[in-house]
Length: 327
Image (cartoon, rainbow, N blue to C red; front, side, top):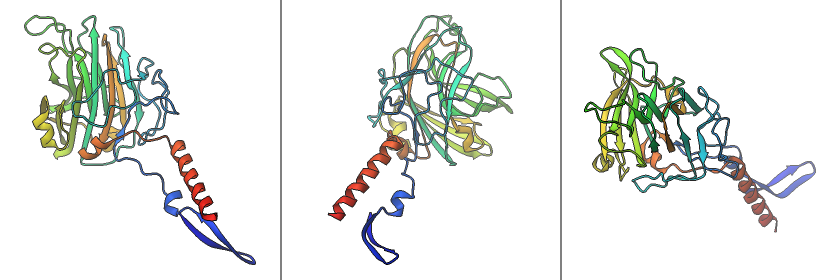
């Protein structure tokens, strides 16, 4: 803020208060990562269906108006037991929940984001599923960053792009004939299998061997683009207790690994944050979706005030400065 004498016809007008050009002309800086804590109240989310909600969250460029449509995904006012294992600055605000049913057709709800171009992307989220009453082979519930293609399983010629994490009921029985009604925690991506692009599920936690019921899973993924021709590298960590570095995650995670994927051509292929569900007869909660171009920014992402609130505070500070200068 500065005070200048202003020239006018017939003389000078002293003591006029000006804000520096950098304060008024430049937009308020936004954090590098794109993150949503589903904060409700004060002009943010309402605790209702996600469909058609459009609160200001930095980095997003549309409301929840994309996808095939769903009114079942809703904002809960609390995190509903969701937590991380790394002692980070989140979760904050609420979460997104849904109670599925075996009769549900494949459905998605999404909002667009201005994901920057980069050779590396880090993504994270928190995942929690409730009980399942029936077994529906092929049922799934995901949260992820991708394009407009619904993340259904496709055996060949897949156009799916992006990275999805969530739960899938892979089969009615395991290979040993035991009922498998817990649901696997999986990654769903597109991979090149024998020259054919296919949707592939990478099992992170086998629901047959370890019940996923009411278990918190904090999943971090790292997508390194074009590591070999069109092939991308996807590293993943489940429940790391430190995210200070890739090495810290690898040494502290419950599960970690790497898979070769063929999942994006440009940043636009990660340009939708999507919730997707099909016939998954269970309740679940997803929270804190984040995407960033480096790990430090991913860890530091915090909710940002609504622009109107920030602008009002700035105007108040300017006015106070002017009054003090005149006095």
